[in-house]
Amino acid sequence: MEEREFDFKKISKSLEEGQYERHLSSLGEGFYLDSIKESVEQSLKNIRAGVNSFIIHGEPQSGKTEMMISLTAKLLDEGNNTIIILVTDQDTLLSQNLLRFRKSGLSPSPRSYKEIIGKNFEVKGETLIILCKKNSSNLKKLISKLRERDFKIIIDDEADFATPNSKINIKEISKINELTKNLIAGGGVYIGVTATPARLDLNNTHKTKTAAWVPFKPHPKYTGQDDFFPEDLSKIKYKINFLPENYDSTYLKDVLFTFLINVAYLNTTLPEMGYSMIVHTSRKKIDHSEDQKEIAKIMQNLSQNKMGEESEKIWKEIWERAKSLHDGKEDDIANYIFNNIERHEIKVLNSNRDKTLDSEATNPLDPFTIIIGGDIVSRGMTFDRLLSMFFTRDVKTIFNQDTYIQRARMFGSRKDYLKYFELSIPKELFSDWHTSFMMHRLSLQSISFGNGPPVWIGSGRIRSTGSSSIDKGTVMINKGEIVSDLFEYRKEIKDALSETGSSPLEKIKSIQSVIGGDALPDFIIKFMEENWLGNGETIRIKTSDANEWGEDVDKEQILRPRRFIRGEEGVHQFLIVYNNNSGKARLFFRPSTSKLHFLINYPRQVPQEPPPKTLIPKSL
Image 1 (tube, rainbow, N blue to C red):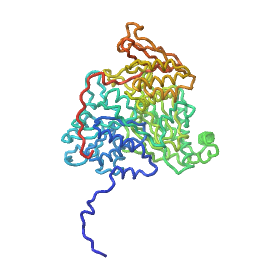
Image 2: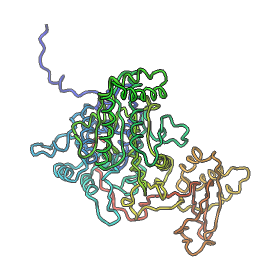
Image 3: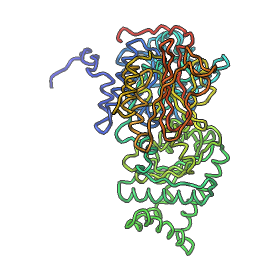
């Protein structure tokens, strides 16, 4: 054998492929890469252009964590040496995200903030990927440790949680808002990642630029708002089990039996896997304890009663239900449950839980895993193979969209078994949830199709976000009307209105071509075409002279404290109010659903601080 000599050049040469390309290759053919690439490339484009604060928004459990890992890999390739991933103040989420980041094979290995802030850890010169909870003590220590690093990139997961300034209207700064601002100070870049960006926009959190926001599209196997809350409820492809407002434990037992039967059907038809069911009834730990006792009693009853007259009655009930759901498979299903009922796990996820076993709840090992919890369950956590959700967590007064959108834990990669999924929920709560997503969908379209700031839509019962976080100095709240910017009242507008043979929608499109997308956003027309028109609804267009209105109308600005348009069910109303003296006009729009509020953030109305100077590495 030929004697070989040591050649340092051979072992020290750089890999031809960067970490980003290697990571994408490792995801395999079954992973949808197009949306990841689009979001990563747009984010890099923002940073290269000097944008120091922006948002990436995508649906709950749609793969945003994988996108953040890919973005981190690309940022490393681009020469960034300090990347900080912020997560909510929960050990579970920190552990879940840290595990996923470390499994990705990123180099250097991602580290917990606990390791970084240790006395013996030296940060000089090292490239760092740090995962840190949004906890004031943790952030203070991390800021102190990294004080000599100028350029840091902060990726804020669940950015609408804790980061916005909840004291903005009393001229104070909430602690996490102040600390995250300090973390960015000195030339850092802030990237907020969220499914619910309304709070960040209406709060002016770290002055993110809406024009630079990056959408993240879900993968093909994703099931989200269009599947669970479609505009047309007849198109629902899963089972909804409507509960009475005052349900009792009998209903929980029925739902649990259906879950056992569907798991057994899947595991006798396909390779065996663990599946989970979420029971989300309250935020109170005492209620979680009661739910746990009730479920444990049911499961224990099935486990212990396998023989005798009483047991035959129980198993006959399961067999008959299995026959009604999966006719022809009832023997196999009942037999599977009979032989495997002891292979179950009942997990409580709240502050009293055993944190070492959280991964078994989010990635079930046993065929039958039941998860009970409140706030910890309702945000951020990804639940693999979730097959059932018993959801009764309602509010009696104001229904916050962002909170309930985050509670849609049934969203995720469920397309392979969606038709076996069951949502058990009171009918009124489902109606509020559905309406909330309809408003959210329209708001997101205002980002996609509008040229101006987003329009966040709510009502007296359902609001976009908590009022304490809304910057009242810059946000205009219009009850029932969307109000345009001022525009020139030109002859072409009058011609479009008088055009014979044109439908009202065609006239509106002609007017838009004259006044532009700022005055009449594309999303309004798009949404009417796709969702409103065709249901017996009509469009009405009127004009009015501002000088003919009373003293409460500002004739120059063409604004009024009260609404210009009265609501009328089934009619989408457009009103152009003009001032012949100034030649200016505004367009007012009131949809057929008249009890709506439209929130628009106009930061240009108040003096703005100059943005901090963004330091860009030479490699960018």
